[in-house]
Structure formats: structure tokens, C-alpha cells
Image 1 (spheres, rainbow, N blue to C red):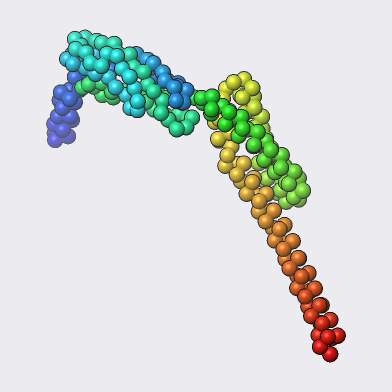
Image 2 (cartoon, one colour):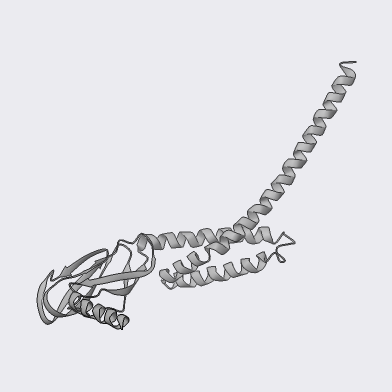
Length: 223
């Protein structure tokens, strides 16, 4: 009984708190990073009503008295620091807010960065592949297979870049970053091991040379 009373109370409070409803709005939006996108929102209800969004926006009209339904034109201004997917929240006076999927697309500067990242990754993979080809344990360690996976993803990214689909290329290059880092770390460890052996050998030879010089000095000079 108590639970039923509590549920009825919530319904009554909700009906009082939210007398308007957002009737229509975009199911998803795309905006170039730093740019803007315009869309329409219809609100149903009565009384003074305004519409606004999360982030930066411009809306017309700013406020209107509605008795049925009213149309608002909203311009969302992108301030996102990165390309990617997220959500935009749309609000209206005395109404439940709604969420819209928001895709932030690369701008011209981002496209240059994506091209540069792709070129750098190609150089890295060429170096990694050459180093791994000399490592007899690379196949057993899974590095050869991982290298082939990264190469395949790079060519997929290139096909997207060539067709102007920079968002898709960005996602591919970002998604493969952990795999490329793993390869770089593996090659780096191999380089460190090789350098360690060289340092040890050089140090041993230097010590031996010092001992020989000391013995010669002691034998002929101090005798």
C-alpha cells in the first residue's frame, strides 16, 4: 500500500513539475569541430516557454507563450576539443530534457593532423617491421601477427582518407594506438637489450685494457 501511495505521489509531482513536453527534435546531429549546426525543436504545452541546450547555442525565439505547440530554431556551436561521439542535451521550460547523439567531425586543421599522423605511423611500422624481421622470437611472441594487423588497419585508414572520410580514418588511427604502442615498446625493449650487451662488452674490454696497461707499467716502469 505504501509503495502505491509513493508511486502516485511521484506521478502527481511530475505532472506538476513538467507541464510541457518536447515533441520533436533530431535523433542525431553532426557538427564540424568549431563549427555549428542548426535544427528545429517543437514544444507542446502552455504558458511561457524557452528552449536551450548544453554547451553554446543560439535560439529563436528566445521565449514564447504557447497554447498547443511552438517551434524553436536552435543553432548549436561546437566547442569540443576533440573529434568524436557524444551527446547534446536539449531543454525546454517545464519539460523533461532529451538527449541527442552528437558526432563531432574533423575540421580542416584536424584533417591535416590526421594526414600527418598517418604518415608518421607508416614510417613507424616500416621501422618496426624491419626490426621484427630480424627477431627470431617475434612470431612466437605474437609480434608478427600484431604488425600485420596494424598494417591492415593503416591501409583501411588510407582508403578512408583517399575518399575524404576523415572521421572514419580518425577512429581507425585512434583505435589502433594501443597496438602500435605495444609494437614500439617491444622494439624498444629489443633495442635496450642490444644496447645493454654492447655497453657490457665495451666496459669489459675497457677494464681488460686498463689491467693490461697497469701490468705493463708495473712490470717495466716500477721494476
